[in-house]
Amino acid sequence: MNIITVGIDLAKNVFAVHGVDDNGKAVLVKPKVLREHLLPLLVQLPPCVIGMESCSGAHHWARLFRQHGHTVRLMAPKFVTPYRMSGKRGKNDATDAAAICEAVTRPNMRFVPVKSEQQQIILCLHRTRQGFVEERTATYNRLRGLIAEFGIVLPLKVASLRREIGAYLEDLPGYANQCIGDLLSHAEQLDARIADYDRIIAHAAREDARSKRLMERPGIGPVTASALLASIGGGHDFKNGRQVAAWIGLTPGQYSSGGKARLGRITKAGDPYLRSLLVMGARAILSGLGNKQDGFSRWARSLQERRGYWRAVVAIAAKNARLAWAVLKYGEDFRLNPNAT
Image (cartoon, rainbow, N blue to C red):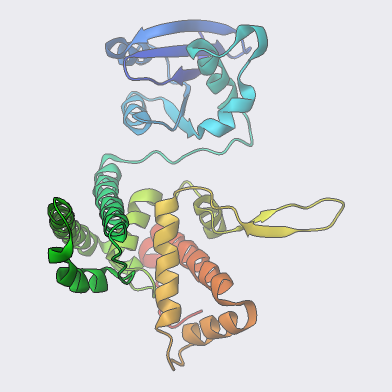
């Protein structure tokens, strides 16, 4: 079989495989391949292009297939959907594999960078930490809702809440006192866990030369630098810095027609966690401008005055994303000037 392209519909235990030859004819159609049989099946094929959706386990399989000489390309599921046959054939694993096989050959298809095992380890730290942060926020929101039922309304700041709630604990009737106490104790445990992960992430960032270069840029701390490095890698999967900013979702959406260019709000595509880190860093820059007179501070201050606070935040975040790509792509050949605009 002269197979040149293979599409794989990933799953937990049963996979679908669709392969075509150089004439586009389906010569390998296996709608049910067990997990333990997938790698042996692909190993016996000559080097070819393998397409998969970027879902759970995709990066793991991509690394395995690359070790055996295959070219692996991952795609966002939403880009595969237009190629899926529907109607009488319906949607099933076999048609999904065929759609993936078709989509991966499109010349203008956009692909997801394959992450290394080290990148996924670092992202595992970030995902776990973010889960604890979200759980802590939910715990405080639940606590506020419960005490409000007894006529107790406290300031929004967590520090103020913890400082003032002690005076009201004895006034809570029945088991309500125990519930609020348990929620406060759980929030303290989450604070300790988050602090531990902050130290681990910061240590990992300081140990990596590329992360240290990223942290030379205002608005990029250890957490942001670590997340950027784990998400972008060496930056070789992007043509330029603006493509990275667009991938993160920090560029305006375009609604142009009839020769008129119309730019709307930012697309908010890509990873919301990475985008939020860059935005928070940009907000920290604006809040700490003060009377600084270096080139970057003057540019940021002028931008805020001309375009408003939130546009300035997005512009600074997008600039940091572009410069981060340049640092990761060119390494020592590209040196950041913290005072440059």
